[in-house]
Image: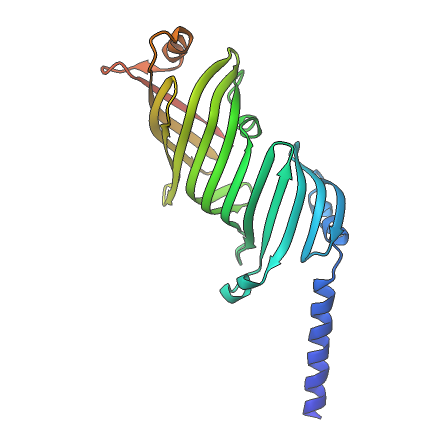
Length: 248
């Protein structure tokens, strides 16, 4: 009798696993849309464990050719994780996405490229339009809802510039992200270009603060010099102290 019960339970577990593995991606996405009405999708195929979406729109941004597949090795770490990627419309990314027991979403080995305009609209820089490409090379990124909990790795701003109020080429910049009890810190520096810059950004509680010093390398860059005069405070060494803050 015990053997029979054991076989029945084993069969039920196998059937349950079969249902989970073959659960249609379209139904899973529909359930997600019921929780997130602003989510728009097209071209859903596959299963909840392995599938793809041709086009996904969230927060006004379009993501093309989104793919995901279950990462079996995550089970040995006591979690459930998926390898995800998307590519198209000037944006690309790949990472392993997992869910912690406290509800936090964890991205490991995140590699991404996206237009800085995707971030610009969330910085609260009234009247300022930025240009260029942001590249992420992060070992780990942890978010809870809309709050960034931790980040470790490098961020690059390639071909940085300003489109408005006046067009201006700035150069290339990089930041090293680390996390401590005070939040996520980004050590920022320039990688060459007309604007020399160095400082620290702090990300916590859904906001950001940026404190940097800057100077113009080429004295012929009159427009850039005027911008520093307007936005910063001139120091004894001739460099300018700049401070920005806002909500993300």
